[in-house]
Length: 336
Image (cartoon, rainbow, N blue to C red; front, side, top):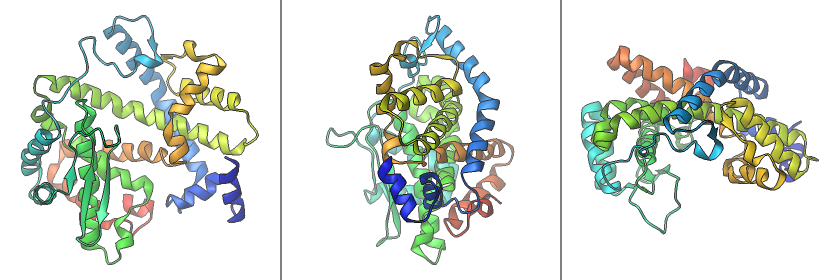
């Protein structure tokens, strides 16, 4: 915390938050707007999320949903995909062939040229996927590590959304730098693709399709709250560098409880165990002031999903235009 604050100071910024907001491409808005967004999310969603948590507890036969119960959605188990990474990547060919000819061609090329590797391996990092550019070939590359959970499909569709944007930006923008979008826009193509592919869930989940769709929609709302809680914590963290480890852990817990009052954290109220929740949040250490991008982008993705149900052709063209524009415009201009 102290080192990062010093980095901001020597570069002429009042705070590390201001420094990182510029680094993340937030040039036409800043910390005030982000804090206002989090407050709005808390006002609009926290009560609804409590109702979802209460319903989840009831499904699981629990009086109260403990923080460690959150990952279990159904008493007979969560949705599971029908196969491994190789099977899922082949099923995705069918999906994209029906969704749009353009993305189908791009996706098939990625599979055929081994630009997509989501097969399971003990030598890969688990629980993480990413997409990056192969500048020499002007093509995207997707990495994942399937583990048999419903997240395998989320990661596949999410990263292919990034891949589609990267391909169109590399193809249409005069500067390779413009293939990268501002952070708060960069997650819109990926999160939107997660929504656009919900109609094809049966290809990946068979009898668990309804479970998956429920988990996905519920998770889409939960993560908005979660990432806002982390942003509020981060904002406090760098403004209070003298805080003790215990104070930081308690503040992290306080932010989590505020955003989702339906979760019972009573077992981690103590000092030693309570700190472990903070230490598990790797994004706080690895990607400061970045996770809020997922919450902001999720709102645009949900709007795209709503419009897709009303007018598929026009919505897809707008989505394609956004992906093609890449990082050539600032946030508000890209949204227009």
